[in-house]
Image 1 (cartoon, rainbow, N blue to C red):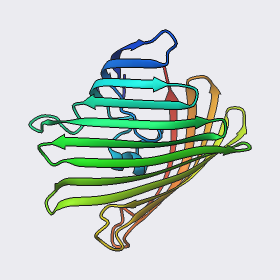
Image 2 (image 1 turned 120 degrees about the vertical axis):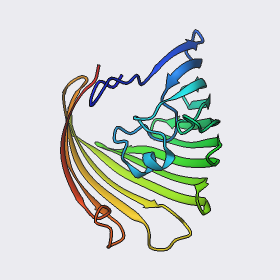
Image 3 (image 1 turned 180 degrees about the horizontal axis):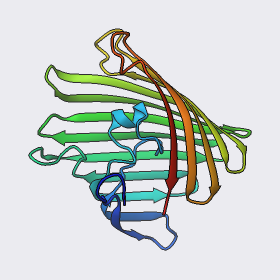
Length: 234
């Protein structure tokens, strides 16, 4: 549950049934959808473009498989954007191959909506090199909900997490967003340097710097951001 800012909002509330070996499960209710890396920073381009992040929940039913080498989910839900007078549904699927050296996965989200259908596809992978964990993701979205009709968009993420010592993580990331593949020179970039300190479980201090880049005449797309955050998780 989100308790601030503003009024409290329920995030996840569901019933989950699993087999005795926990290999198969089904859950019904309100929950986060599976699509790519579940990043804490919901403002990353891949999480914004896919529309699936840690601030967006949906209501539906999920079937899942969790095995030593494989993880897979299939969801039938309302669709986060199908609210009010907008009707439809969403089918979300994800599969990942798990190995000691890391994982490789693929995801898709098929949205049927009275405001315009939407198809999203993602590839993601992760591995470690010594104390550094690498995350990568590429998302492609085809959206029919624009005045000119269908728009195809692309977002990428490359992130390195260096475990300096226990409880201290240094994150370096680079991102790319093309909001319309038909338009030249409209892309955006974002670079991040973030330090995360976790002194005890469920408490984290984050501070960092971000540099945004885009078309020169747009000041919002060309800005710097410095931030300090304190997270408490219960």
